[in-house]
Length: 84
Image (tube, rainbow, N blue to C red; front, side, top):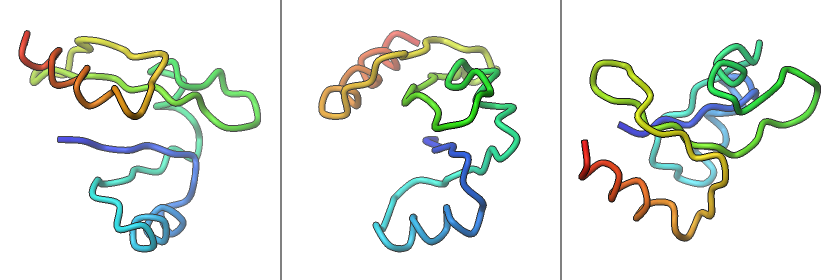
């Protein structure tokens, strides 16, 4: 399962998803709690870093990707999934 997380409201996320035919669910993190927990934000004003977190079936963090290059990232994650 792939989920996106942003500080935007649920209504804004729905509008983005509809406008761009975004194929993944988008979660709202208005209080930045999840983003802080996963290291994408330090809680200060502004946008979060673009990071990905691969979470295993038991809820454990398998790998955190602090630098994401969109063109290469899917293959990187798929390779890591093959090791799980």
